[in-house]
Amino acid sequence: MILSKALLQAPKLERRVDGQLWVTMGEAEAPVRVHRCFPWSDPQRYVSLRDDDHHELAFVADAVELDSGSRLVLEEALAEAGFLLEVLAIDEIHSEVEIRRWIVETRQGRRSFQTRLDDWPREVPGGGLVIRDVAGDLYHVERPEALDNKSRGLLWAFVD
Image (cartoon, rainbow, N blue to C red; front, side):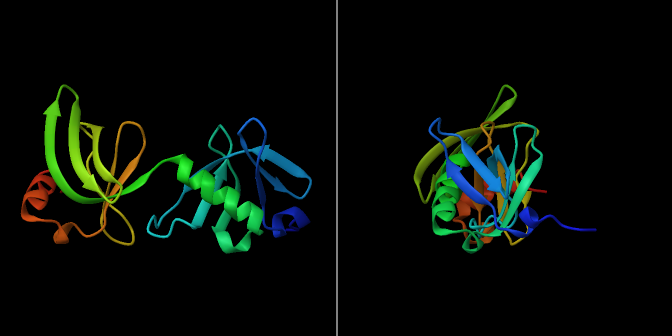
């Protein structure tokens, strides 16, 4: 199999006038969205660049592979793409009609979010648990065993 020269080059990223993120590899260019891959504990690594149909067009194993302009654009796009909030404490969890409402303390401050009743915290590679809210934002509990007693009690009711 012969790889094209474009596939051997690091992708170039830019934010166009309309605000859309674009990737260029050789002669090919396309609008993309960023998608973090595991482990989420290292957000500058393993980033998939996907089109609107969720097809991967490029992959960034490590942001240091990119030129400085592309790296800055990637960092900004990752910050906008969806939050990965680190949960420090869980204050309340209430079940409502088809929704579970969480009130948590994160490094970014107090947050309230909702999950579907059938969505449960999941263990993730690299450790900890992740909770995905109905908006697609991610809440990571890095060390569940290190949470305070109240938080652990609330969380363990929803963990297998």
